[in-house]
Image 1 (cartoon, rainbow, N blue to C red):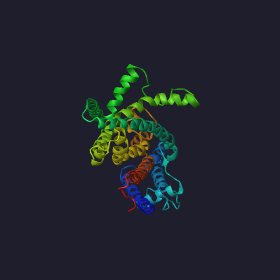
Image 2 (image 1 turned 120 degrees about the horizontal axis):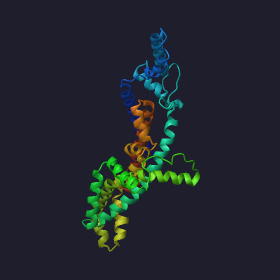
Image 3 (image 1 turned 60 degrees about the horizontal axis):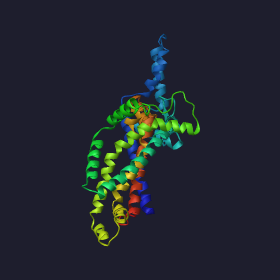
Image 4 (image 1 turned 90 degrees about the vertical axis):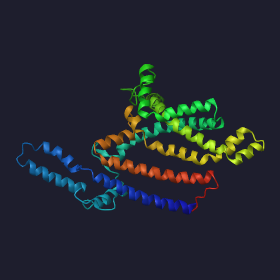
Length: 342
């Protein structure tokens, strides 16, 4: 297995390099010049200066040299990584410089630190609640296939799966926040509050409750059907008929034999959810005004703050590649028939 992991890590590194260049190249094609945007503030102070236009152009050229945008895309890419010099200096990712947000006027890592905490916080709870409901419910529907319970759950999951998350958010805000008044409409904490300790956690959970309910509810349909399909297929195997013919209790047949045979697709779902806790929910975070990475991602795209966008996308690529490796290794642990040593 060790050789397999090393090969996969080498493959992941190659994919990471290729995708990083593709993303960098795509954003370099966007008709936006950071030097011009930065020089516009300088231009405002030169209105009454007869040499203003000339000084403005000189300022643009100076900024382009400083930023390295006067170089071709390959030189800029190597400079961004820290493998090539920009203005004679190596100052990129390999030197610990993860980029600078010109919109927020601080390093990108500082911009994303707090939103990442908020995204992970809410998505961990959504993942735990979602898996805690969908896996038992999917197993129950599979064991009672064709019953009224199964039919009712299937109808409900199809309806829930078909409704977009922004519609669910609006309906839940209208019902639970406006009509019933149980939760706030948006925000992350009580305005003007200075809670600490347990009181701060309670206040934060109170504001996170409605977005958490929306995220959990919107994921129930697809995941429940996924688990039900995997368990239904496992329960139809010959080995399950043999186990029942031997007189084993139904609980042992379902949870010890059938569930193990259904683990392969379920592992994909579970690990996919856990790797997804870092992605954030763009729709939910924007509707409820949550300071998460999904919201920061959209805002940075709109404001052409591409240093933030590039780092986020690189992070998502790494999470995706690591998640795929973990899934493959988990397959080998769950099912001895799956070999991961080649």
